[in-house]
Image 1 (cartoon, rainbow, N blue to C red):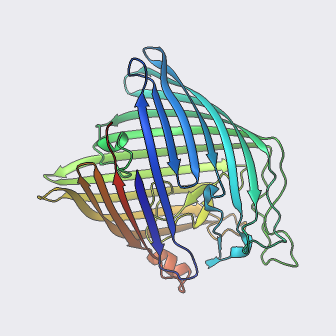
Image 2: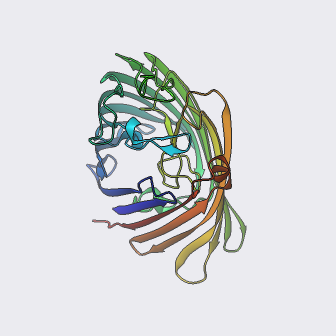
Image 3: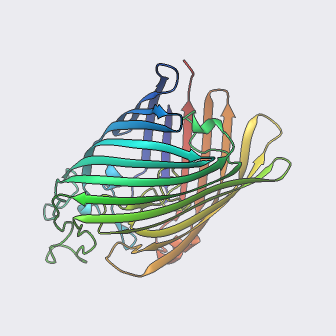
Length: 358
């Protein structure tokens, strides 16, 4: 379990928290894994690694997320926090997949899911003139291809540890396709009420995406490691319900120090984060600097086609003490401050985690 909290240097925008509790159990011959997880506003029940053969297994999940999907209860546009455009989005998902390890370190996962959306206005905040998304069913298919050459780290199995210490590398690509049964344009569409009107949330029945990612870590001296995290994505036909969230230093988003969690939502983006990890001579502690750069289309969320480049820098403390985990991360974005001088453009995030093997 863990408790995560983020603060941002802007008094008009709220901070964010996340609370996670997870239970894992091996079944039968110690292969199939049953997981139950509560994460803030999401409940997930999952069964994975049900082996059909030595290199092939099945999995599935039932997942429900209430009111907080994609952090759409916050809305930033042109550098300003606009509560009138916020919504509370919920969804339920039933998903099944096949895992296949055809050779060596290469892994294939093919998923098929059915999702149901439900959106409401945030009481006391959302404008009554805001048009809500269609409460539609969506069929989702994902093909994940991964080459995994990372050394084992306890963070992969001890989920109270959000930031793995990387040694080696992994690279992957996800091809996604959605079929949304019912669609309609939504958002701030009344020109008599909103300026500017929302032209970016016009989902199509067929939606597709491709996401590429890379994780790497290398020892460059005794007690010193370099880590690289990279991600790029391109999507078409989507809306803010399914766009990638950008901002903050959480493990759930495209990271940029100095920008808050889910400051913007992107269908086209590229990002890289580099960090140096210095292991202290006492206890199990790593500290170091980090720097991140992103390129994102329609950064201001006004329906523009141009891309914006931003960067930020900061630092971190990663302290592992038995079953406990303590993380502090923070930073500043000169690029965000240049775009919007009225913003503080700094952020800080803290995590306290604990886990036990029963």
